[in-house]
Image (cartoon, rainbow, N blue to C red; front, top):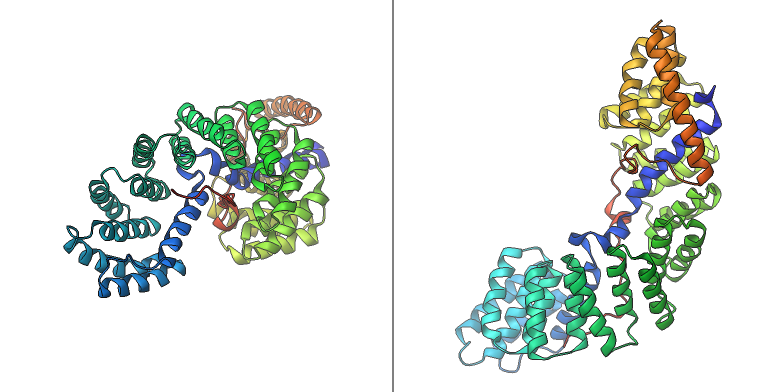
Length: 488
């Protein structure tokens, strides 16, 4: 019957992968979620600004003691140890403040370095207080105001950053670097119309800047204008052919619009141009999975797991693709590796339970599946597979509550209603059995229509199935800007 058929198992496989796509979609969120956009580019700017300052040595007007402190702090900054630099910068700033009337440039240089260090280690309150002091001292110095705005943007204090970028634009009108960074900050605040205007002005000043067209594409995508976004990213690629981020975002936009075959081409280009980014491999694998090309999907996931061998999620995806291929030995090995790296990985346990059940080891399957449910009471596959196992073992009274809860968790899977039909029939609950059989037939027809249309399963409200969390090493990899505009 359909509950055990290849077609039904494939539907549940695709449903589970639909959930995993959310876990792997975090790169797109870097560009779309207001709290997480384009921070890598800003971090890169801050690091370069600090390193330039450290290479140039202490200000000429600094005292010998202050010079020694700044030189030592510079060594920490060059090593990326901002926490180690902070006490030294604080001591230098204290001495500078005592001499501020004599040498205000020294004061500003030290305070800017300290503010940037506070931002790097997340001491936002200290940074805000210091930023107010710097702003008072800066007066109409466009360079200082702009540098402070960059530090604030890097610390995600976008409202303050926008105000200072706008002030810089008043002091030094129509400067590319100012307008570009103003546009990025406005984008992070979801002020998309203003962001578009600022970035368009930047593009007018420097029409050869691929980064500006790339950012304009992000704005257009956030405004749900796919055609404009794709055109802008293509323009960025004309200006810089080796631009993996642009290729990746074109692929994401095409994928969002269900143009999966075309998206694969651009995912592959992003992988070729930046093979060290595991998320590019994962999204390529996701696209292959939507095309049911599981061998290519598995190859992409294996490359991601090779790049990040300590990532439980990467190994899990390898196992998932192997399971879709019916290669249960390979799948089990990958799931076990994932479980060793993350012992509380309910998804790996649920899949191990499925494989054990398919191989007839009922006791082991039940152990895995109950462990998965103990870790995650909302785990739909574990509800389904444990309920199905108990039906097979004729433990109908135990199976029904699990299957009923599973049917509430996932309202589009016909298989679980067939299992309920079977259990109710054996328990002589005729009305319930007839209701479940009717639901099974209705959902099975809907499933066939979705398969014919090439759609991946979604919940009844149109949203994808809830996804497990992905580890930082995979899911929070922001796309790097290779050549961001330099500060003033």
